[in-house]
Length: 333
Image (cartoon, rainbow, N blue to C red; front, top):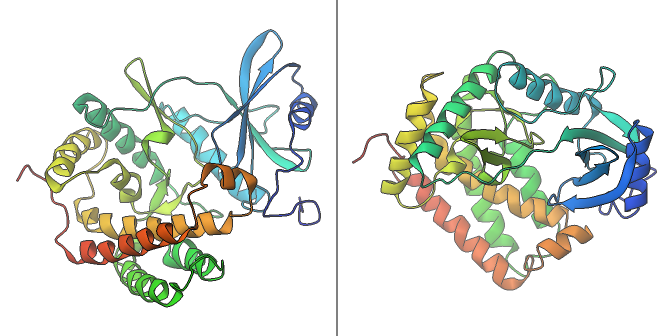
């Protein structure tokens, strides 16, 4: 599907009103009862849609031109493969053998509604189960490779974001400092990541508590929109925060659960700060690239001012120091 003549890519959803959402769902064979609620999602648009005499469904409208049919197909295949292995990843609804639909000019996937709350990272039981979940997920993720989805690379994930920021006109005189800091960081990140080229597997790619649900003693994972080939640590490092002692305590619980399925990739602990730095750079580029999207303007109204960029520059400087410090290690001391 070519949407280049249909959408302003900076504001691709301006015509996606409730009537068009329900029309799209009804064309897929459902009968909407008129209830519709937008859910928190910035990159895509996600709605809970009421269905007559049935449970509501979750409809995901993919951002136009971000992913191809083949790339979305691999996302869906991965989640279905995980579900078949007994891993509670929330996979798309399969309807007449298909999981990806085209209606109203959008790529659409449907999901069953699932409830729960975010896991508690200061709860040892939750940390242990997170480890088990990720170990099980990665044991499936390593079985084969994505052919169409991208790998986590400095060029794709870092340089593109850097260019978006530099071309945004938002830096207010900080262009040179920003370029110098990000060039230094990206060169070092690239060097570190290349050491693990042979260890990349299929990962969820955006593993934080906002994409995890805990209910009745069980974890569920949603939103595989960022799944890609990457070192396993990409799914682990975002679960660690606080000082080194706290991170070690949390990591020990995660490792114990992880190793019920796979040996923990201890050597990849040296990637925690490089991956954190890469995400910081990516995040600012993501916001810069989406700055004309009304949903981003509303949700990130603080973004783009002088104070924001000063804080961002300070964060980049701190990451240069963090990447030169000793890596996190296992153990309590």
